[in-house]
Image (tube, rainbow, N blue to C red; front, side):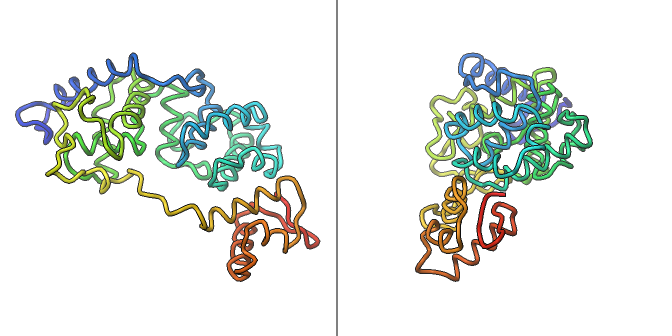
Length: 302
């Protein structure tokens, strides 16, 4: 790392400041890191599955689904050769079923073009369906132990607050790269994500428990606007789920797990008998997304 003037603290080099940050956070993580099943393996497929599941979904909801999914689909080939309907049935309850569809499409590409092995380069990972910068880098770090900085919503929040200003995506990744301690990619990225999930949280951050509070520019000050919400990659409040299109689509897919459904059955499952135009729009969206199939007047999972 090069020594430059840093906006966090005047007259302190980036290298010196970064050493303070990494030392403090790694020390915190040595006793606070959560024990999670995908952290106990270097299996790139298991890591990949967990990272896709964790997109916009809490750890608590992912845990039971992850175990069942890996048991049923232990390799990319096993998912590639399965019906999407079988995968969606296991996925139900996690939400955002397009992720499951993309995961199967990725498994098919991995099986067909990568010898059944999850790619170990950023370019190849980014070429997989639905895989963005975070997921690609997470697999490289957590499965292949490559020195890459992973930036999720928690990491973005920490860096923005320590910097004291909103950051765009490119600047955010550059600052994350500067902080990364070489040779400790796995440990560092896990620590950063856990610290953001447990201490530097979005609402009511626990600044009194923060091990880098003396370095943080923001420090939760009441007179200083939080720079995190305006920073690239930080989570934005989700729209209300109750009564949403997402809820109605989920109800239709849940009903299709066990039974073939008539058009009226799908509308009833979505609880949209009072709004046939909306029901038809959502049915067409499910068909277009490949999440429902329609044959001889009946709807099923694909």
